[in-house]
Image (tube, rainbow over all chains, first blue to last red):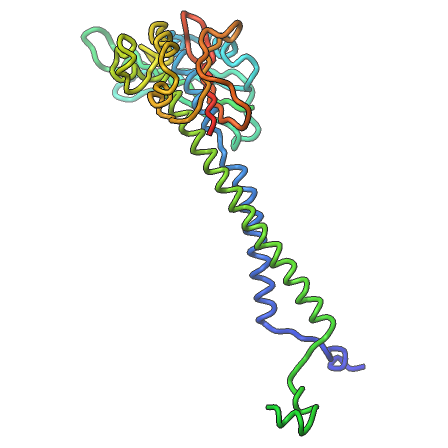
Length: 146
Length: 167
């Protein structure tokens, strides 16, 4: 049997191929959209929670303390409802620039950053009563996740 | 064309091709197409419901933001709660003032709904992280609720401020 005879009765058109491709694309897009809806919920709620924690720590003057005190305070606020990691970066003014003095951190590094909410707050210390220049500042970043 | 068919049946069918394979392919194609259209409509319904819920969630979080980040309007609204435009519970961010909390508890429920800026039924509680609720307002209801939970300080203790909004 020749190849031509084997092909007898086969119908192949670009139109058919195109229509199948369009339907498959449409189905894939629909499924992808469906999955994305479930992920758009985001974590606005946890962002607000992280912000609350830092605002309260700031109000109590803890942001200028060390990481151990911060860790203890966060622990007493979140009470195992969330996992967290806190990072402190201390900077000091040095001739018009800020030099990183020290990094401190507590808590595990999150594995999946897409599910992590972050809040950051900085506190500055000025040169003195008659000196409005910033002498040093500390940035505290709080990551929370479930 | 009718006179041609009468003249010769073969001439009438010239150019037509039909096979079981083709019918099966068309059938599968339409099944997939129908599934896609149905999935699309289902997603659209899901998306609309999710959007509505998200808007309610944003309203609830915004209401808790106003409660825990502002003094309210006017700033001393607790002295005359009948004229309150916006309810704020704090003097400093996230530090609840007992007088403002008491004034909110005493306020007419319908009035408080408007003053909170949600316009929907709600239930608000302020509960220490260890202990009994220090304040509850509104009614817990059956059904789906959007919950906004925040942390604050009340009388030197950490409290959880939880707002349930029933859309």
